[in-house]
Image (tube, rainbow, N blue to C red):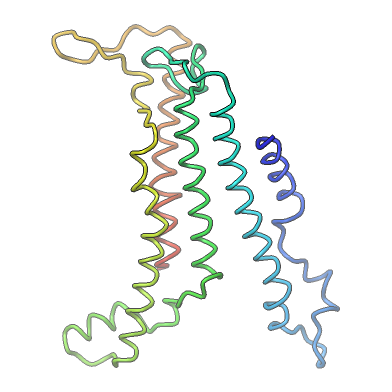
Length: 244
């Protein structure tokens, strides 16, 4: 049921919710007394409503995704199933998705929910002080520390406040990683490295054509995960908080 609701939420969002307002369709509703588009009405009404729709949609998507993962882990009769060494996930022809892998996946569902809340918060919801409104906050800080001219106390405090608040937001979005060790961990390399005792070194067994293909898929999956973690997750969080 949770999986069905999650799927319906994705389809509904793609068709209806996450589409920006159509200014041409609502042009007559946004005209002021002078015949021009009233940007303030647009920002406080149409665009604001759309922003909250996106926020609500993203929250529902994250909650339903987490619920689908946890209910599957509880309901599927595979609690006692364990795969052979070097087999895990859905890429291996002989392996099953174990309960531990589903529990591990739920962590990333929650992580996505935290990140999307952070992105909404920093960009529009929390009314964060903008670094673009400061006059080169890094130079203000440096000039103040060196005792040179170029920044007054009010500007210095404003720059410090903007930097500290955004740094706190980034740390809050990253904080779920402190709980990562409470969830199961599956090594990607364990899917293609067979450990043995041949003079104390690791060795790789001879692979069939199917195993060779599975190994390549697992290696692609590993680099996909590294790209997600360091670019889409941490890199995006930092670039949004401290835009160039």
